[in-house]
Image 1 (tube, rainbow, N blue to C red):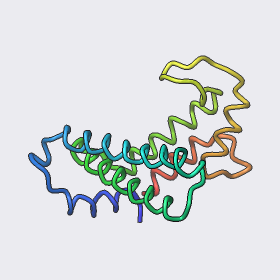
Image 2 (cartoon, one colour):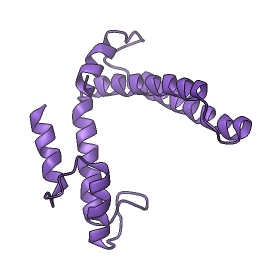
Image 3 (spheres, rainbow, N blue to C red):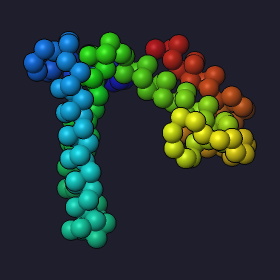
Image 4 (cartoon, one colour):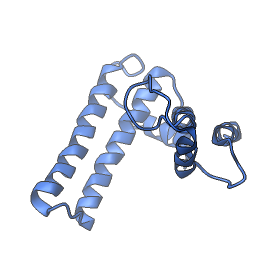
Length: 145
């Protein structure tokens, strides 16, 4: 299953007020579910000395599924395809990595060592050792959908 298929199937279960004209509901739901993930991780530190048991992992996975559902709903509300959103994000990260700007914060990042960025991009993208331009591979992935 890919993101587009997930989004399609998740839409079948979307039942909330003003669906199709309601950015608030999925946005607030996404925030709430992300908070539940954070709460479970916090309790791993507090109650389990940082040890993630299979039960905890399962509980966090369930909450991550809820996060994914709300992302799908928000994409629907905005008329966005989840696969396009995911690929655009990887493309943005690859470009930042190529420029050595993967660390830091904000959209305006200062230039650092570009070779460091290329190495970082190789760690997050499907990588062919002969490929010196990972953003081209992302475009190919996008075109294959």
